[in-house]
Length: 273
Image (tube, rainbow, N blue to C red; front, side, top):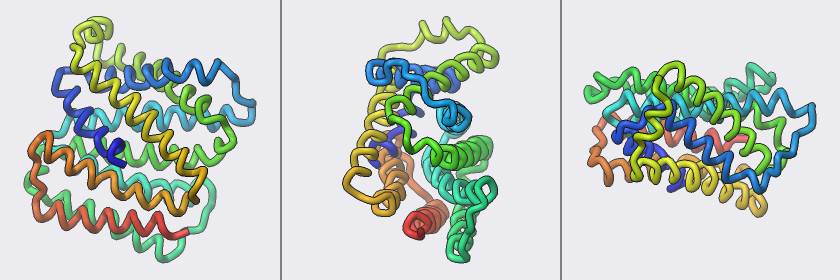
């Protein structure tokens, strides 16, 4: 969870070094793909998985990371972006109900409502007056992550290296094309990236995208999903602490109040079966 939380301040540091946000997301996914090639060995998944695999790769490998970087790029304050990512859980439950017809209990509806109330309280923070575009992209990031969790349910039997390599490959190619069309001068931008920024991008790919996820998969061998998932509520806490240490951001009273409501709501959403 420390690794997951660190992704946001680390990405902001790279963006502050003038790395274009879409290009940075592409390079992150490209590194994930390259590292996983020896484990993947270019195995092709069965045809029945392809539709869900492509949908998962686009939602997770493209949309989540591009919206994450855009939210940080258009925000001067990082902590609300980290907290906004917690909406992925309510969005995921709502997406499951709409797309898979799953039933949502009254307790879950109450917790989903309280999570959005917590975010609404944070929106009234005067410090966020010039950061609404970043918060909008953060909401799209959370929605994309929620959708990816729905698609991932049909991919549980796939090899982990195959799944992540596919996500890395599709994410890298699609984001590189988008960067070329929107940000322009892609080759020039890549050449101009300094060593510090390459280190930060590598950290996101190796420590966050690979290391943190592999650690979670390792835990699944010994513990149930119900025992592990509530710990996801910790990563915004670690992320906010790291943001304070790196950027000196001091949470306001409204942010603390809204944050407590959001994290508590998401924690219990994880606990309810």
